[in-house]
Image 1 (spheres, rainbow, N blue to C red):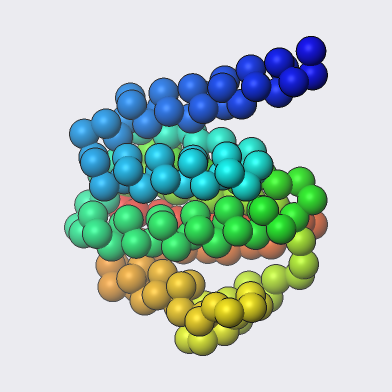
Image 2: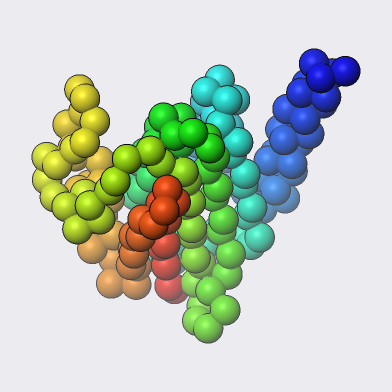
Length: 168
């Protein structure tokens, strides 16, 4: 019974993640493919990865390749940190900005050790073995190219959050 429930739960997680993809980003193959690959990775690593996309993705003046690079780096980091943590969860939420024209992206994940949110964006800074430390530096560089975009980071009690706004 436990085995059956575990398989049923895994299948329902996949359906719950893929349905929002089909609704809001089916016409955006770059984002769709990126998220499907992250869903697959999370399943291999036994990470609970919830995706809640509640609006069409409009990146305004941000190029879609830059958007995908930012999203890919942040999700890679979130899933890797979650895989090393005890709780093993990550979540992606994309909503409309309620006050302005734009979207809000939140990536929330569990993590194991302490994080210095002031240093993580420095070129070459990393806490991971065999990593370059260029990912978050690249994210900050891309976000700063677009006047209508911002990123805020917080880490508290094992929960790491990236909050991105893209206005148009």
